[in-house]
Amino acid sequence: AQSVAQPEDQVNVAEGNPLTVKCTYSVSGNPYLFWYVQYPNRGLQFLLKYITGDNLVKGSYGFEAEFNKSQTSFHLKKPSALVSDSALYFCAVGGLTGGGNKLTFGTGTQLKVEL
Amino acid sequence: DSGVTQTPKHLITATGQRVTLRCSPRSGDLSVYWYQQSLDQGLQFLIQYYNGEERAKGNILERFSAQQFPDLHSELNLSSLELGDSALYFCASSVGGLETQYFGPGTRLLVL
Image 1 (cartoon, rainbow over the protein chains, first blue to last red):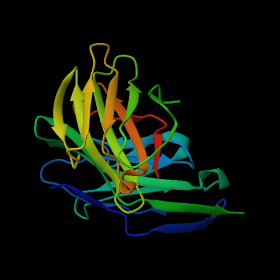
Image 2: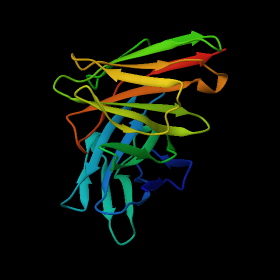
Image 3: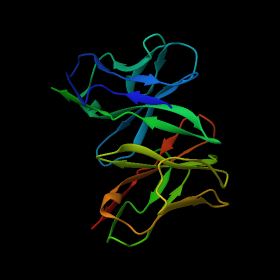
């Protein structure tokens, strides 16, 4: 069975500072990893994904994620945080199930960027 | 805007009732997924359809059912509603396989 862990319920960072939101995963086979962001009263917005290739994946709004196979991690990063980045962030792993596929999500990390 | 539309945005109903949630996928996407987001269970996969056929099932209750129509829109039917069914229900679509799933804005269901 596939699973994702987001060890931090909340991350606080000052605007302009770098941010990291942590994610570790467990899958059998090759991992398909995703980050989504959810703003209040909105749906999930896709940020980036890792399928194969470079371990550093660049995504939307200046976010990037680093895939580390030996540590089974896929941490989300941004060099300089903005107040507008404050939101709920979900890591997810994609996998086959039955004749189809699904995303398994972590519990989410609330990011708060303060002035 | 992801291109996935869901109606209604909000739904308030009573226990024991039945409701239908509707989803229209992005143009060109053949796969539709349904997810439930609640405070106690987080985001959980319910069911997937691909080009009209059920492809995968998650922790979907027997009281819940879904279908995908020839025009590729999908409906999620929830019956004999209980208080615990109150949640945000998301639809997502993709071209298929393990490609990126794009999510709609969700339907917030409140069962009183």
